[in-house]
Length: 212
Image (cartoon, rainbow, N blue to C red; front, side):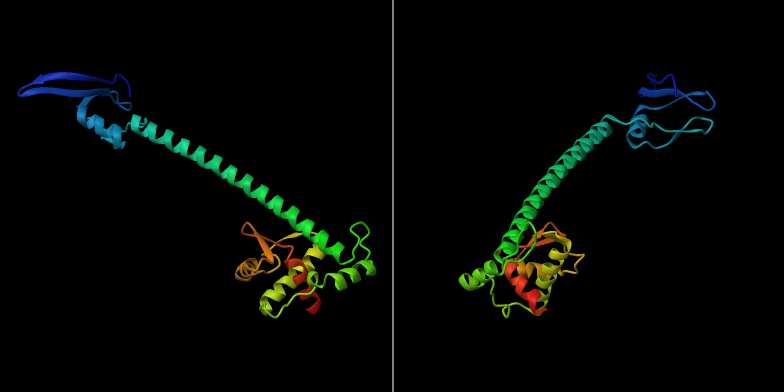
């Protein structure tokens, strides 16, 4: 549409303001009341020339432009916060993996396993077993069969995968059992998917795996 303008006409009983335009289809010049023009700009509804051709105001109003800008700012902020959360979660997971790896290494060394060649030295294992029995012997009776099974699974999979942190779903871990073990300080849930044995959990898992 072209030649858009407001024209004022003096009529009987007052003043009439018309929005004057020409039809993009047939070229006829026509006018509609100014208040109708304002409503159609707001709601983007159709209005018609005298020959019945439909037209709409497709441009955004100032309020719509401001609302869109506000949504874009909110989306950018949400994306930035999401990135910060992801970075924090990645850092927490990295720290948990490092701690779990350290715990596993200390546990293996404590049981006489050389971290370099993976050979077991009975003298060291015997020393730990005789001088520090609390390090390797724990009461499993206080744990349910499901807890013991999960601990044994984590222990076996950790050795098989050479990874201190495991995907809980891949090893069939039930999160209720994971939480129960976490409250006892035996495992550490990482995010919503992964789990690792704690320093206290390693010897218990070792004992559970040996019984399984």
